[in-house]
Length: 572
Ligand code: SF4
Image (cartoon, rainbow, N blue to C red; front, side, top):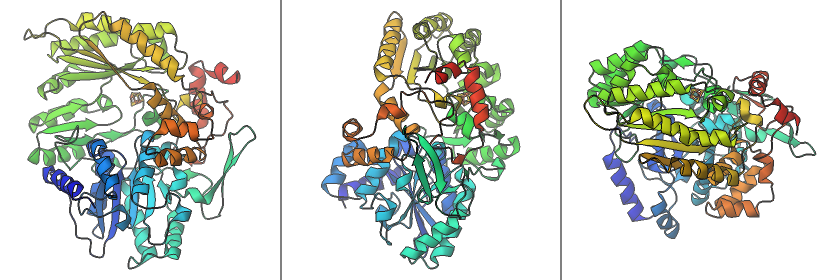
């Protein structure tokens, strides 16, 4: 193991506040792995929450593992250092359970690279009795885990707060005394089969039709359910969802992240989060009051987290509580139609220098198609609020490649930017000029469980042309900046988001090629267009149809048709 990498890990630990280091003696060891770098993983509230919950169990030691920073990768490979945990710096293969927390499909390749670097066989059937059991949780696990499912012993479908304790209890019962042996692995998996929200991919056979789509996913044994039902937390007040670990090395590492609730009832037709976290559950003001009091003891900054924080029904009261405790507040993105004077004032007081909104489309017509029904007038009103309260910068999220999008919709984005600028350019009450308008452009990726799951992904070349139109369009303004992701990266996301188990071979090739997924696509025998740019007929069986996240297909079809898209599908 590289001494240099060890030293780096120790330096990271030394910078942290709130880390948990436990003795291993006689405990079940869990490596909680975020398949991206430390700074990305440590900004993830779900990851931090599961870490805290697991470590609260007296017979569990949970430690964190991350994908190496790009500048460290060569050192890992040169010295054959396996991925190791931050806390005790033990290699991944030393743990009883290795749980990947996966938020982005693009990180699937890193999951396999980490297993390879650790010397753990990728496929469960090749693993030895002494190898850890490999599981996956996080939002990708309950959207569509199929491309990566063949590498998992089991998958946690749903919210993790409650279920982690049940997994550990099942492990304890099956392994008595932590003496791993082949048949005990089977005994453990058998026990897991009866827990709602546990998906055992190898207990299901995927059948295909002649055209290559999924015909059915059928249980191989009677002890697994035909449909795996998502696990969801009934009472969100029961579990505090807050980041306890602070580090200057993560984007939000200087503040405590606090979840105000789960789900969003707005129903934007592209939004995965708005669908799969249903029903909407808000934490009570009382429970947040207690949490804020705790936070205020050792921190003065809070980031509120939730699918749509400005829709939290008691947001005004919550802001007052935060103010009473002298805590500064930050919110990542706000709905223009739920902004209030009080909210913007509190954000300004909390040191907010940039207010972020997500109009998503340049025209009201397209916003209606995607059901993000924010009017231009509401956006203008938000600009006035921003200036009135002296917030210097505004950031707006847009998507390109949306269903029914035309050239006019794209050209409307820089035009809208111009009209927003007209309202933003006024000095604030203290006479300070406006700073910058940032347009953050992403490519629309059709996601499972959304009304747009049948829609095609746009061609990367067409997305690049659209980006060109926007960039040229804003070239006439001095203080507008355009940020965007590479449409080819979005293409990878589109392949993995709606892929089936055959896409697992592509992931394996990409991992073998050190993450070079473009080369892997050329080597792979599958057809990426089948998963990406093809519009799906409404009666197609999806690779994720044997999961039930509480969203009815009939409702999604209705929404798809209300968007005017049924004709598109009928043409296929
Ligand atoms: S995009 Fe935002 S407002 Fe719309 S459903 Fe998703 S979380 Fe809610």
